Image 1 (cartoon, rainbow, N blue to C red):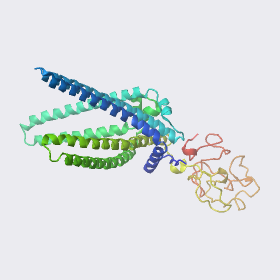
Image 2 (cartoon, one colour):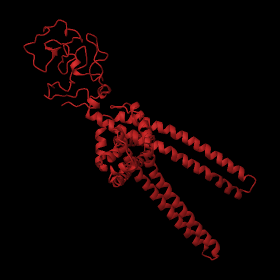
Image 3 (cartoon, rainbow, N blue to C red):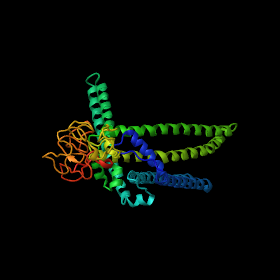
Image 4 (cartoon, one colour):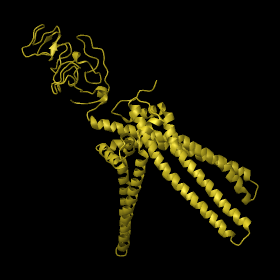
Length: 453
């Protein structure tokens, strides 16, 4: 049976537990989405390396066996063609990996939201739910590069201006260089802080593009809007996820160093006793298995780290939406559970309105009297079996009667508090809402909602 997910609003522990639960529940889907951009990256790089070796080697061999005076020119031409192929393959691999990674993260966000809503996703369903995501991802990449380049240029111009001014002042006053250097350092720190602030405010851009299908600019605007007033919580939650992944990356790095050390030692032993030129080949051959092992290890770890961060951020985004729509939502209000009514004359096990979802027919009025006091079988301003002149059908009543004081089954006025229960305002399906006139009013929130109608 799947692990039940925590309800809104999420604490940091809820985000962590839900992330692990969703990743465990649909790990095949998330692994497949993670492998798509990685497979593209590795495939293009392999093609590029093969082209580089083929063209470069062909040029060298042609130069060696031609025996002509233009042998060096042929070798250089072959190496030039090989370098061109390698550069093109690198650019294609990098850009393609970025685009496919954004698409994969957007579809992971869709799968995460569907898991929160109790649905099961697949590769086909996430693709169907994200039409045009590749094009929007390309727009986001272009927009991000443009913003980054503009920010770097502005920062470079400002720093360069201060450097020129500092050099001019250094010739006239002692200590001016130190002052200018301090100003440049402050500007650099401000630049880093600014990038961090913008990154946090735009953290939900990819989930919004995937889940809501918005354009990059509209997604950035909405991400900026929904994080208003929640910057520090967003930053704190994200830093915790980053810390978890950083620890994992450190462990992987140490393991990689150990693997390369072992295979390097094997190569050193294999090449011992030979000349310096003959030692290079065994060392290189021995390191190839080490590189393969390290690459496979990094891919295996990315099958966890990439979807982990995507799910974590999507849960933060979804929870922030719920918080913004329900500012007064609490954990107690999110859980709606019926409990058996206490016996007559005994206090309830838990106050009304604090997560019990208690039926209104057993609730207490706002008169300040406890359950079982001044009610059924006890004295009140309205005797048992008699009605108050002001009472009406559907208003507060005792057991089988209506009265002014609180009685068995009597309700209090919304917003008032009695000793049995927190503020009244959640009424049963058949009790009338004095504010709206409807027969049902969501107070503490049925199923995590907090709607006032």
